[in-house]
Length: 277
Image (cartoon, rainbow, N blue to C red; front, side, top):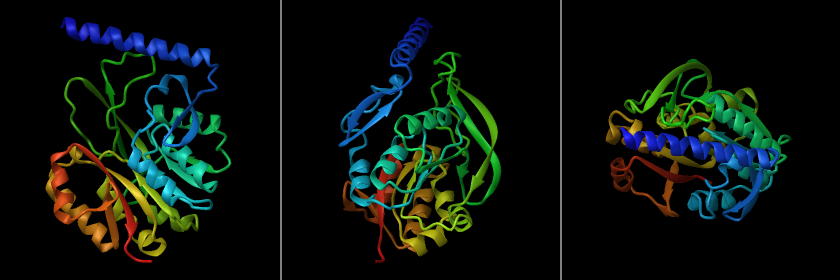
């Protein structure tokens, strides 16, 4: 009990300090440089992103995203990948984020980095089908009630985190990648997916686009959200195979056995390229 109280006080004090930093910087952001790119973020996030933050993903972005490349950022969170993509491509980036608190920060980060002309922010989720569905917000009870709650795997997938997480359900719009690309007459060159357990459904709704446009991309796989980890990974592998995509882990092509063995991890990222030219 005492430990929990001390932890709550620490978290509230830390939130206060970060909010104060926001105020001191007049909410114009603080410049940071990581993985070779300079950008601005709100003061409260300045310690989150070290120089080598998700290094292999950002090296892959720099390799694949050239001027004119059109990108989709699915699960944009606060927009670090979105802004990175926009600065590399100087071309349209479509940024999907259904979490209200993250959406607010995403808009701010896009604005303070002067990317409004290239980034389109969509307060929606990406799924297998276009429509509406329930979206689960998972908020830590330890983060207080000052509007800066700590998010834990907000997702279309219901995950039980126990008593330390408050659950809230909201209705959100959903788009499939295929419908979105066709409706907007887009050729998609790069896709990043970080959707807290919805990876398989998103891929199911992207077949026409991937087979037509041959994009490269990054996928964050959240094994903890799968009821059957090995079967879901096997299904994802099969879709990658059907779409003629090559999964890469730390620059090396993954075998099926390596891919399925990742079921032992909670989360892992991999990159993909097209097997077709």
